[in-house]
Length: 108
Figure 1: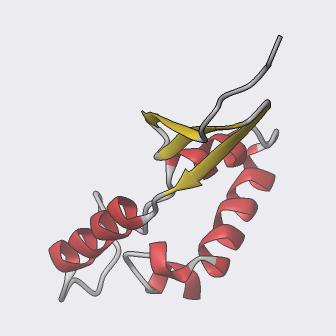
Figure 2: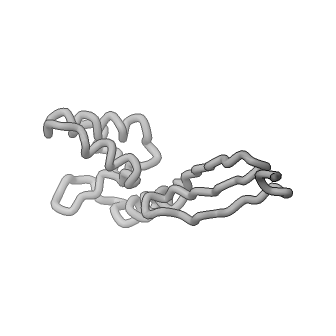
Figure 3: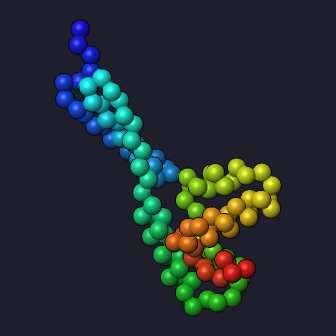
């Protein structure tokens, strides 16, 4: 009895709430799971945040310092201890400046 597919088949499973798309690739009797992440919607959100705050130079209520995509936020929120978590978040924003909406946050 022959196993596997006669032709290669790819089945997209869609995008989850974190922005991760999963595609299943069947090649003969081999299954490959491909996961891809699309950051563009998150970067567009940050661009809009920057535009909304343009010209505001002081700290105040409602200040958006940036946006952390859900896939990263889950990892950062799992860090025990508020002080350690805040330090990790600031380090993440320093490493991923494209997600910062208020540059002065990094200078504090």
